[in-house]
Image (cartoon, rainbow, N blue to C red; front, side, top):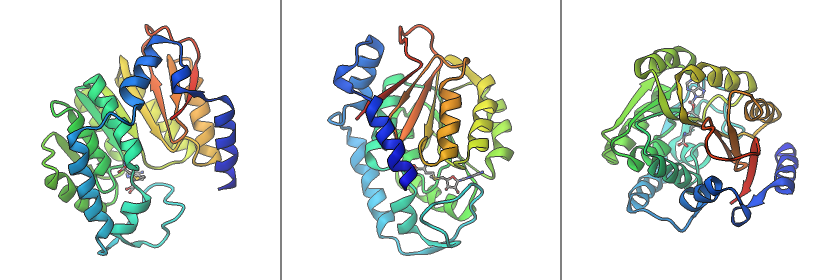
Length: 261
Ligand SMILES: C[S@@+](CC[C@H](N)C(=O)[O-])C[C@H]1O[C@@H](n2cnc3c(N)ncnc32)[C@H](O)[C@@H]1O
């Protein structure tokens, strides 16, 4: 917690308000993706399903293949607790929705489905996209399947197993991905490993979104390494999540822009 507070203070000291951005690409990004007043009808249906999960007291047995949750430790967990603590909050799920709605990617990959709410946001943002989502815990994946059926998300393929096991085949199957959301196994080594595994499967316009980039010292280090890497074009730090761009034709000069939202 202290670590996160220190990180946040560091972030705020260098972050720009979205109205202060000067580059045209970043201004457009802020207007199309970060504007919280841009609401879509799909948000209502998605939040109704989240509300149901938040009321669901059923206990399920969880096997966490990643570093696990800071708050949920027991291996028997209530669905409502997972819904409260593990899913992206509406504000950030909406950012992912608007990002996909704006870019219209054809192939999307999510590492860490959990209960499927953020998967639903991404699938509904572009119904023509194919969304692959990977989840290591079979009991959690069962709930996600129900979520995605309730949301009528027909463009999602949910794969159950460890990222390390599933990722090579998924990447090979589609060859290139337009958007990858990495939201599971928040350790430095795993994050860098998934980034390196994904690299050969990107195009110049692909984007990778990393969640919880300042969640721990290790995640901070992974984010610093990735956002300063010579293979990327530039990055945007929203504190809660970080977005990596490979497009060299945007005129964005700073390697990393932190934006207050
Ligand atoms: C933070 S939650 C994902 C939240 C989800 N993206 C959302 O916003 O709704 C992370 C999920 O990744 C899964 N996970 C963590 N490490 C994994 C690994 N190595 N292989 C497969 N799944 C893993 C966990 O079981 C957990 O459900």
